[in-house]
Image 1 (cartoon, rainbow, N blue to C red):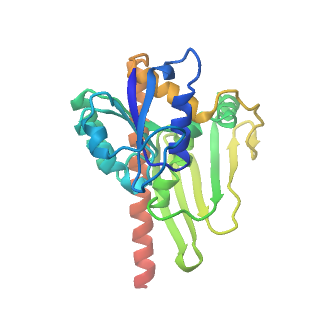
Image 2 (cartoon, rainbow, N blue to C red):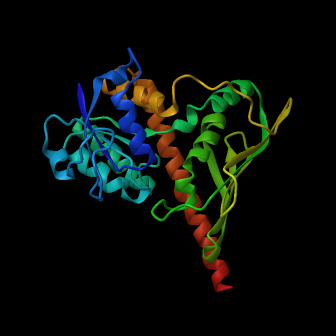
Image 3 (spheres, rainbow, N blue to C red):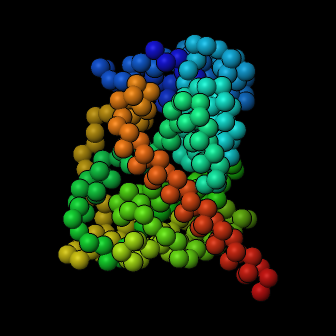
Length: 297
């Protein structure tokens, strides 16, 4: 059994505790046992699980795994502490706010001989799985992905990082990408922002990614993918799957702990995660250069 601690008790932390208390029967997730949770606030028991300090969690031999479910800005500090203590770590995306930091953390995990897993439940949704099947064999000519949603709370970072799930969709669908341009509109007083990124596939086909957030904006992904044979403007309908997204991710992480995931799959996943973080770095750099130029004009 892998004794586990959950760091951060928001929505994700609550779900992690729930899923470990009632894991998918006959799955690798049954090997996880929640031993406590960590929070900056002093809280009552959560689902029968007691609060412990981070010092206790780092010191205790019966705790082998940490689930980091804090705001994005606190990921690096928590991941590094648990890796240094020789604990396996599962973290909600993004694991870090720069590509270099993520490389350092993954190197540290390798040095310590432990698993570092970045959650990407957006790749496990039924509509994404169906979309990937539907576009198989088609040649992209051009496309766009426009996400809208409400304002983010502080601590979630630049939109290329907080919205990296959408970038991961595009990379998983169309392969490695390069950034050709990026810009950022922001009205802090009204809690509105719009990031526009121009991307290019290896086949030199253009993709546009827009991340737009503000009060009253619905949480929606709008796609427009033009292929050689058809154009897709709606996500395909897909039946809801019986196993929840976080449970699917928990099973995958548990399989990694048990050495049940092939090495080539682990390598491909690391490559994709780091590629997306490298793209996010470049998008932030170009966007901020553009903002600086506009302010100086």
